[in-house]
Image (cartoon, rainbow, N blue to C red; front, side, top):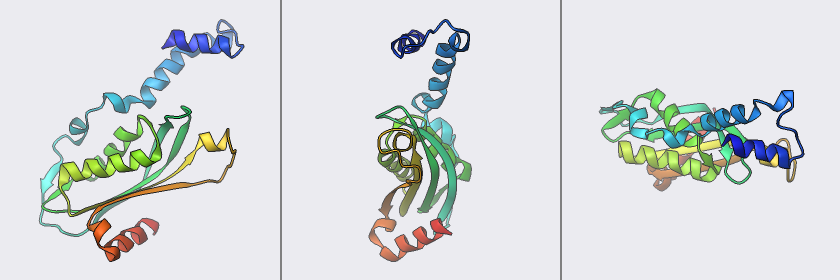
Length: 180
């Protein structure tokens, strides 16, 4: 990857041997590997057995989970907050694992729509809950720095599964709790 970065610098009209750019290929290589580490992470290892039996049947919500991802179309960052909820059906998951699940999928080349769905389906698969709700609110540098150059756009995506999809009152309740 470092040779590709060096070549890109040349194609941009830069001198990769100048002082400020000498280590740029190494730094970009390390940065990209960190920003896309979700490809090498195993979701089961991240959950690490933190799924427990429980009689709880009420909503579990973790809001305002900061996330950072990279747009697969322009390789520019998008970032925001994830709000995740589920209705247990005999199993609960450690709360920190919800943030870890968000991070594993966010640290891949993504579009926000797919990221939202991947988080919801992961919870559905591992918990078999009565419902899953995921809402992401994000800003995209591909819209802010290039293209339309709109600085205050907020993209909101949602995925509702199970009871959150089939019961309008449950859906409205979770959306209200996400907004508080």
